[in-house]
Image (cartoon, rainbow, N blue to C red; front, side, top):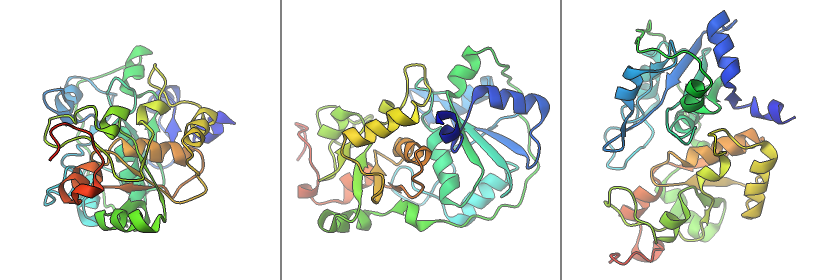
Length: 295
């Protein structure tokens, strides 16, 4: 049963290794490396060039975003997304598998998975365990960068999967959906600094905290569906009711969207601007933090 549920959004390392070796039947298989450029911590593109899964293409979420927005990681337009993924040799029938090389196992890959889902792509999956475990299990890697033949892609945004600043503001009074923050407990409570120091830590009123790392094993794999279900239940989150996830910039929030999707909930929304936008736009009384430098 667990494997059946996991197959809704995840593929195993052995499955991908076999598909690359024998050739996946049906629609073309496209593998995407979503490792992120986050100086000075890491340079995902350089890591990709150094070594990646054979045939994988680099998906840069810092390029495939709304470049006009002052906020960190907002979705691009339908046409911009369609052009970007089309240039990666992806069409609407492509079977897309996303991974990243972060040590937690699954980090930025969940954001790319959600982007494809938000724009209506059906066959998109995350590699369970990520590049960390691909290497650990002895599967081949390469530095060869392939150049795909561009494809035509049509993107149609499912706006119900994306919440705006105004949606969150209205929800403070209406309580139409549950709001869950996927950052660490310290960043949520305001006792641990936000990376980079540009904004203070804290959270949106009435939001719950469920760190995205709770859903991953120490080895970097997704926990079982039963364990995921318990994580939501223990926080009082009802997956039968509307649910929106936030974080700092809409990246780790997608891990919880992925987990809820595995459990059969396909309508979990992401607050795309997340805490970064909220910090800059919300009134002081709408930001809960105990950070000493908060003014």
